Length: 223
Image (cartoon, rainbow, N blue to C red; front, side, top):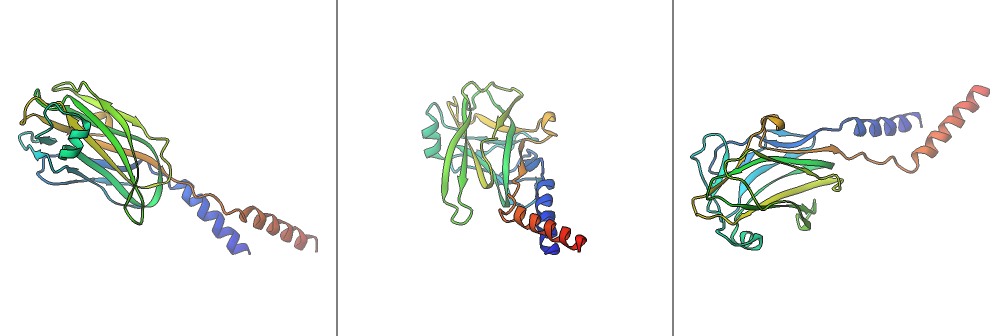
């Protein structure tokens, strides 16, 4: 009885004390392919920044993950249909209560003026989409700016598989670019997903076991 109670109690406190501020973070860098996260939280198994099928890499900037061929004029729906979006996210063996998503961004003079960001949640077993919600939009992206988005995600709890999809449209030229930029405020990261490990509720029987153990101990002392 003592060992069972002690093990359950330690497991509960360990889960609560293992909270991590960073789930996944990406240092923006030039590449023609995918960009892997360079900081991962406990239990996180994979996280990548990728381009949709409609985008091409632009390697003219030696410091950022830059893309071109964004939808000219158009809409979010058209950008979605043509694959003009960026993806990133994470998969984890344990659940996270999300707190925020932050990222730095910029465009060239002919790059996309409008962007929107969705969170896509998937079933941990089947990988099927269970929800897709827009969480951010900027319809006046400034050219050559130092914009940083900080998005509240506290409504999303116990998440093990999350994908973020950034759509871009209203470009004025096919060579116009949009890039993810590192920011000093994000610890020189371009993207930062933050949260805490979900606290596993104590089994309903644990208080009863504790009470029984206490009575048992008291009875032994009296005897």
